[in-house]
Image (cartoon, rainbow, N blue to C red; front, top):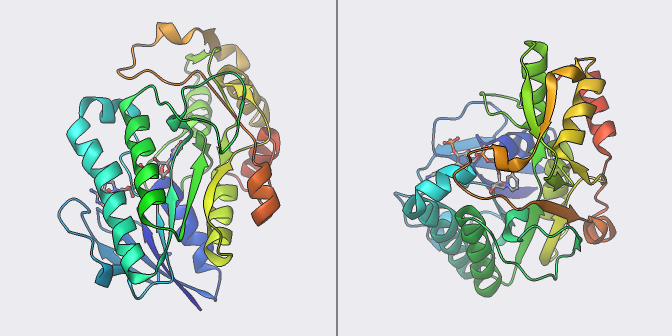
Length: 295
Ligand SMILES: NC(=O)c1ccc[n+]([C@@H]2O[C@H](COP(=O)([O-])OP(=O)(O)OC[C@H]3O[C@@H](n4cnc5c(N)ncnc54)[C@H](OP(=O)(O)O)[C@@H]3O)[C@@H](O)[C@H]2O)c1
C-alpha cells in the first residue's frame, strides 16, 4: 500500500488524480484543499488553507509521496495579486520541499510550461527557463527551490491541460469551445499561440505512475500534436459535430489580457515515455475519448 498526500485535491488535475487513485486498491490517498471537498474520491480529506499553516515535516512524514498540484493557476490573477501568487506558488512549495526533505517523503511537484519564454522550437527538460509573466516566474522559482531543497523530488511540466471536469465548474479550452459552440455563440480564437496541449486523464495517470516508480528530475508531460489554439478549436468543433463557422481566427494582440503569454510551447514527452511509459496521445484521440465517454 502506498500512502499519498495530494494537495489541490479539488482542482482540475487534483480531481482526476484522486479519481484514478480511488480505483487503485494499492493506493491510500489523503486530499488537502482550500475549500471543503467537492467529490468523494479521497480516502481521507482535510480542508487546509496552505497560507494559514506552516507545513512541517510531521505533517507529511506518514506519507510515502506528496503530490503537489495546489497553486494559483490563473495567469492574469497572479499578475494582479503578486504577493498572494508568491506565497501560494512559491512559498508553499518551498515549505513542502523542506518538510519532505526532513521526513524523507518523496515530492512530485506540478510545474508548468509557462517557465519558458515561448520560442517556436522544440523545448527539452534541460533548456533554459525564462518566463514572460509573474505566474511563470513563481513556477520557475518554485522549481528551483524544490530541486535545491529536496533530492527525492520529481517535477512535471504539463501544457494547457484539457479534458472533462469531474466536479465543480472549472473549465478549460475544450469545454469552453464546446459549450460556446453548442450555445451558438461566436468565439474569437488566437492563431499565433501554439501548444502541445496535455490531456488531463493522461497527466493524472502519469503522475500516479511517477508516484509508484521512484525517479528524480524534470519531465515534460504533453500531447503529441503541436497546434495553434485556433486549429484546436476547429478540431473540437469537428469532433463534437459543432459549427466551425462560429470560430473567428484572430491575432493574440486583439485580446486585452493582463499578463503576456508565451507564444509557443513545443514540448516532447520522450523522456517521460522512456522512463514512465507515458503515452503522448494526439489531440484528436483525446477528443474522441471524451466524445465516447459523453464528456
Ligand atoms: N490548467 C492548466 O492548463 C495548467 C497548465 C500547466 C500547469 N498547470 C499547473 O498544474 C497544477 C494544477 O492545475 P489545475 O488546473 O488543476 O489548477 P486548479 O484547478 O486551479 O486547482 C488548484 C487547486 O489549488 C488549491 N489551492 C489554491 N490556493 C490554495 C490555498 N491557499 N490553500 C489550499 N489550497 C489551495 C485549490 O483549492 P480549492 O479548489 O479547494 O480552493 C485548487 O484545488 C498547478 O500547479 C498549475 O500551476 C496547470
